[in-house]
Image 1: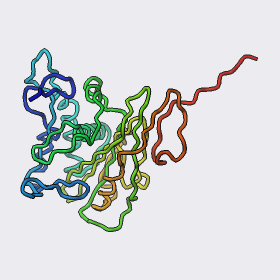
Image 2 (image 1 turned 60 degrees about the vertical axis):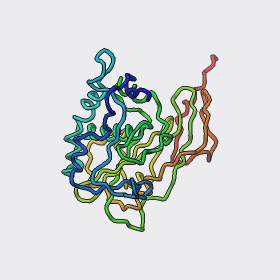
Image 3 (image 1 turned 180 degrees about the vertical axis):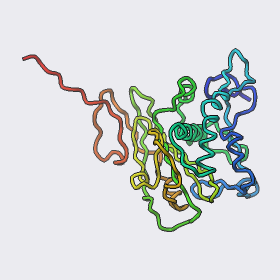
Length: 304
């Protein structure tokens, strides 16, 4: 068996993998089962066709901790706890358990924790404690994102997070456009580029609603969300709001939740950007996508 290496600093991880959803967060679900996992609205089967479990599956990644060699390991798990988990405990419990509005630094801690959690949950090396395992080819994860996060503390720039509130109603009519945005693959001479891709996670609320988070990676692109324009979801990252109150968000149906989850689709046009390129042919991309091209150079002024 090959050695596991820490995703943040590269040191060999000699212990077990660390949890993406940590114990303090999982405890909020104690006694709330049974739980099901859905993909595209369909329940995922475990062993012998069972679709319900009395506890949530653990998601784990190789991250070094205090048990690694002191001269090599950086205790990246401890760093995650200090930088993301501890600051988020009170805001997450306030927003998702007490259903209270949060503002100021609490919003920052809540949103940064949410982005970090979905980012790690999308990593191709993620292992679940119960099958089925995710397709490791689903997310083409830029290998330098997590080391850069460890070094700078800054989340990757080309990420957007949306939040919607889902109710128990199935609801046949939908206010969410049944629109799919085909994400291109960008090759850029001076940027990471790559394909855009999305991941969705939903966390239960105490009143039978669900908070649905959607994280989109969009290298060298800016993308608008069809449900954001009509106020059905909010976008708390990368522009942090001053205040976040999930109670003022419209409650969406399960069908609207499924439409949100399938909004962004991989497999769009391959675009090779040339140095200094300042335009693209019309109709090549969805009008919701804007490629960040090089600025048009100012005309030089000759002497008179």
